[in-house]
Length: 457
Image 1 (cartoon, rainbow, N blue to C red):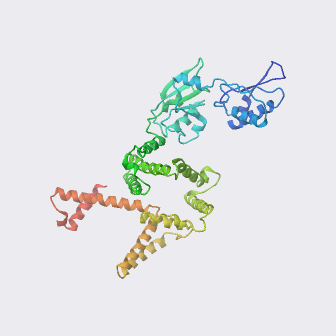
Image 2: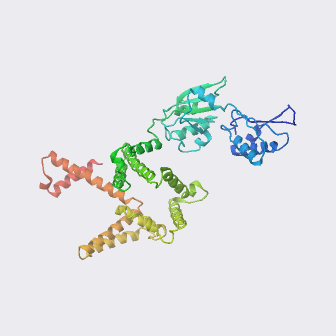
């Protein structure tokens, strides 16, 4: 490993002596597997020497509490043991970097470590804040940082690399984000400055917009909304997002997800105002749930395949219900919202039953059940009985769809869209020929229907 900074330990040989024996910890970086192991070893050695009557002086580049994990830990441990300790503050690397960039870090500069950021899939700071990323010591770490940042920032985002700030070798390099790992100047004293995106790019700024709408001097319509009055809008925006998905239109999907986000943030803001919950609690809850239910990703559990994941998910949900005191009173199907569209509800019910083995071993009985239900519809006596048998038939159709791992709701929406498109073609041809659909035969309309099918390829 390459040391992030060079640390030295001048050990005093005796009281009153002005002579020092100097040691460095460079060897630890060569032997240890992780930086955490290096820092832990440094702390132990410094404390061991500090317990001696002669004491010890531990020197680090810059300020001992800035980007130095050993400094705070040594002070904490020394104070806990009652060891006398003096902290001599030095100039950190930050001040020269600020001078090189010509920036004021206030009010919102985020400080991020390249090792931490490079290990993430998504930046852990809001994009409408400027950020200084430290300890980019080689092209590999620069590449890892670049990959994390491109989850939010455009490849062409203008950035600045600061090398050896405050020294005679200082270089401030302006480049695009995608170019940062190509710099020939990257070394142990390299930092990356990323300017903020516009003020409307973060969740926090959007929360402020929504809170402003509901403030006493805000929008009258937004101010009078409640959880219940917003119900229909939440449903409408969800369906509009689904429509964008069906259309495979990413631009429309981006817009509809924004509209759906508005509904979520509105409900969260109402929760804050009513003292019910905060957005932080919403995010914390879903974060914890997702991590808890994915032990094969965030833990050591070994699970094979999608079916294994779903079965383990169900077991974890049952354990959560038991821990919350509802395990004995709530069944597997109780968690399926009754407000779901009937097709989705039917498929989810059958999915959950299948997870515990309530399912046929192969698809043949599924077809047989479907034919059985069709026959029962034919033999039904009276409208009420026929309606019931038709419901059973639909349930059996959904089961067939489930066996083919197709989403029933999406499949029917696609069929509806296809019918609308073809029927619109029939209407168009009727207008072009000056005819009324009501005056046409089924065979004539069927001919145009086939034309529409042919145009679809």
